[in-house]
Length: 97
Image (cartoon, rainbow, N blue to C red; front, side, top):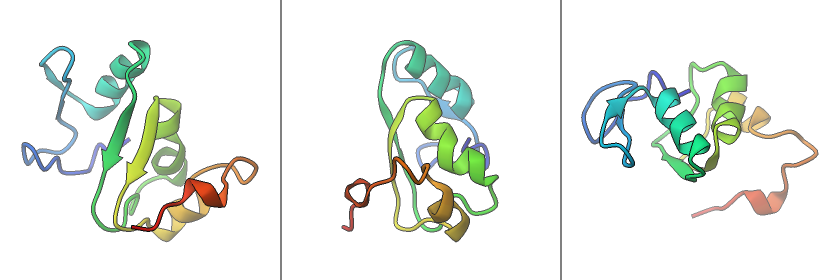
């Protein structure tokens, strides 16, 4: 999850600061730690979120690891088509800013 995304805070891929521990670690490891501790988190992206990703990871892993929202300018078509199971994806889940 997000291992190829460049972190705007440090210019590195797959390296984020865990704000609970102060340590810098891989994105999935940090997300797992937040989930274990009950901390909700969000992804803030730019254009075409999920491009080049496995649709299952880009669309479902943030939710599986406790992510609350993905805030981005646009989604890659493959992610847009698969970002949540059709039975739970409601029009109210989408926000146009």
